[in-house]
Image (cartoon, rainbow, N blue to C red):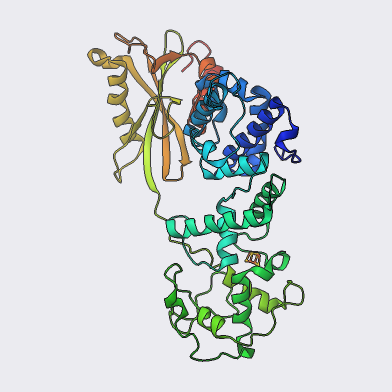
Amino acid sequence: MPWRKPFLPPSSLSRADLSRRAYEVWISETMLQQTRVATVVGYYQKWMARWPTIWDLAAATEEDVVGMWAGLGYYSRARRVWEAARMVCCVADGDGDGNGGVLPGDVDSLMRLPGVGRYSAGAVAAIVFGVAAPVVDGNVLRVLSRQMGVLGDVKADRTVVELLWAAAGELVKAVAGDGVSERPGHWGQALMELGSTVCMPKPNCTACPITETCRAYAEGLALANRGGVRIKEGVVEDVEDLCTLCAPLEETAENEDEGSEPASKPSRNGGILSRFFATTQTPRQTTTASGIDARTMTVIINHARKFPLKKPKKRVREEETLVCAIRRASDGRYLIHQRPAKGLLAGLWELPSHTLPVTNDSSPESRRTQALPYVAELVATQRNKRAVKHVCEIGSVPWLFSHLKLTMHVHLFEIDDAERLPEQGPRERWASAQDIETESMGTGMKRCWALVKKRIGETTQLNPARPV
Ligand code: SF4
């Protein structure tokens, strides 16, 4: 990972080097949110080649920055990164005396910058400035929920999330000791890495270096050994009832495999936790994974997989849109629109798009019927609808957002003569194919444009005199 570098105390760095290092970590951590490392590496390298310092970024145009982000999703993040860079280069040091350009070194000040949440603030503070700040991503939430045995929803339950953040804060303080050092950054990155490589949704407890402190591991071991465990009845009967944070545990068969049904219904009494707490003479845990037989390890892993609590996913909304490539015959330009400044794909350019009403009758013919008046309205040729020619539906592009499953049906139109074409405002214009190639568009829309290009290319080869 090109952004991983040895820690150097901030006091030993020149202002320019400190600025550069903080900038690298900030950009990489922002890109890494919701995106896999393998994808981010290429984007990061291109970004740094174009804007090697925060000053270069602050001097860029918003449009260029958003364009560079295309493909990483959450485009508003790119806009906020740009805004934050501009702030840091002007006033981040608070006195406006021209000493800006270095991101602040503490979490609170970092979080005052646009788009910087506590995760990225923690990462910059810990990794760059050596401050004891927690760095908690989804992987760390999973590791901590297992280590602490918290069976809660780490995505939606604020109380659970805050508890785990607080625990992470205490842990990093204990690890860091006094002063500034590489330890907070190493600790945060190690926890994240453990979550992404070992304590994955299906954990590899056999390879885990911290089984000794893992509550889920210990419970799984007690469950596997319960035939030999002496349970002191009556000491703690309803321990699950004492905890208002965790969901009830489902007790499962010891040899439960992936996909098999639980052996019993959820139980609040006499469940695994009661057995665990009531056990006074649990056989000594094996503190490393060595010496654990395969059956026992399967029970442990299946138990650990219950953490954190998984809530059934909400059904993703489905939507169909018409994406209309409207080609002006006289000069081969296409009408493009800019999306509103807020909301999905904010500020990006697109071929005019129209959301279809939800029906069971989505066929090429019904879509054509709906596309025609939409396009006629757009190009204001109501007095002569024959000027709008529907060439064809070229194809469909499925696209998945986190909350939306979209199918984009790409239609090609040609207009011979536009009596009153739309005013060319800041949010719409007739663009050449070359302009569209370099325009800031979402990746889904770029796929739609690729279909149009292919179609035009094929038609041109067949009949160069008449492109469409
Ligand atoms: S022992 Fe297993 S569940 Fe616990 S932290 Fe390690 S990998 Fe995760």
